[in-house]
Amino acid sequence: MSTLFRIKPLNLLTQEANEEGENTLKRSLGAGNLITLGIGAIIGAGIFVLTGKAAAVHAGPAVALSFVLAGITCAFAGLCYAEFASIIPIAGSAYTYGYATLGEIVAWIIGWDLVMEYAFGAATVASGWSGYFNSLLQQLHIYIPPQLTATPGTPLVFFENKWLPVSAMDPTIDISHLQHATGVFNLVAMIAILLVTHHLSDIIPEIDRVILMRNGEIAEFDSSLSVENREIVDAPDFRQLPRGERGAQAVL
Image (cartoon, rainbow, N blue to C red; front, top):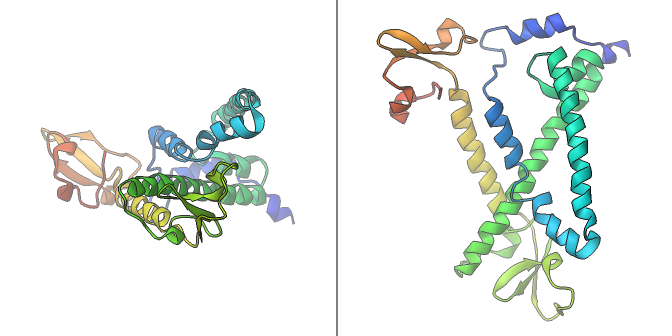
């Protein structure tokens, strides 16, 4: 039982963070990437889509007050993370902080929570954007089978030349005489996730694997990489190189 709550000392965390080699994790994403990742997980779906409906149908002005309360809570959470980051200045977020202070089992739970958070966030956004894309296609009179445009079990009706979720219909409208369908699989959302995943798998491994030479001198490189993982490119600007010449290297 004691092994479940064993903590990882700060010196060991620092040593692992500085290790080099083929089987070690490297920091490939920066602050800008993480910010856009968080924004991308909420824009177009979730609270920004449901706020208007919730305010109109259920809560009214209380929705705005709940945002104020949530903002205050986020401010305190940010202060907590700032304190953690100053004490344990190592990448890893809540997983590393939990491992260093609360124990291995807590870090394991937090790690899987983070995986589930981004997995469900990506699925929700993909489902929301698939609805936008399908609505655009229907305005162009291009119809995908409704069973392939919604999450499993979602009831749909054909109203005003569009397939719409029953939940989005005006309650005063009688839908009993309309054509019905039930979602089986959201094909559009799956394709969106596959395309984004393919793009990221092509970009992320290429980050920070090039030494940029200008006039025979090293201009830019990632010092965390071992020498055998670096490649020298003699060019006035790395971004001027054709995509093919960057190959499986990196984008500085």
